Image (tube, rainbow, N blue to C red; front, top):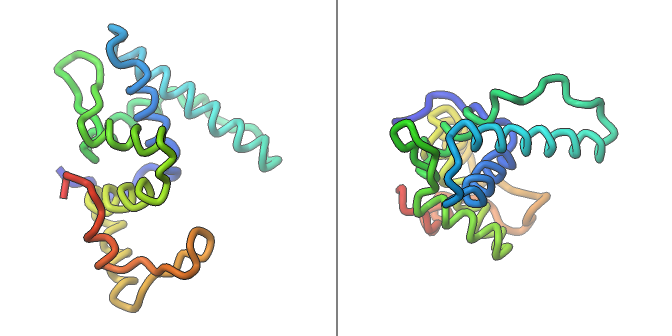
Length: 160
C-alpha cells in the first residue's frame, strides 16, 4: 500500500519508533504501551530540540503521534502489526536499528531516502521532477556528492 502524502515532518520520529520497538521487543508489552512510549519519546525529542534552539515549548501533548509513527513504520516495511498484539520490527526495521547502533549514518541516510521515496507518492514525484532538471546537491551533508538515480540504485533496502 502506498501512502499518498508525506505525513511525518521529522525523520527522527521514525528513528524513535524503531528504537522504542527494538527496546521493548520480548518484554511482553502491549501495543498501547508501545504507542505511549513512542509518544513520550517523540515529545521529549521535540521539547529538547525546542530548548536547544531557544524556541517555545511544544503546544500539544503528542499523545497521538505514537500510533501515526507506528503506522508509517508499517507502510515502510520497518514494522508489522500483529493482530491485536504489539508491533514488531521486520528484518528491514532491525537493519535500521543496526545502522543506528553502529553509527553507519551515510548508509542509514541512503536507506531512509529510498524507503521514503518508495512510500510517499508525492515526495517521490517532486524528487524525481527535480532529478529530471539535474542532480540534487546536499551542501550541508556532502557538498561534493550529488544525489542521482544511480546513487539511489545502490541502496541496500530489500523492499525495492
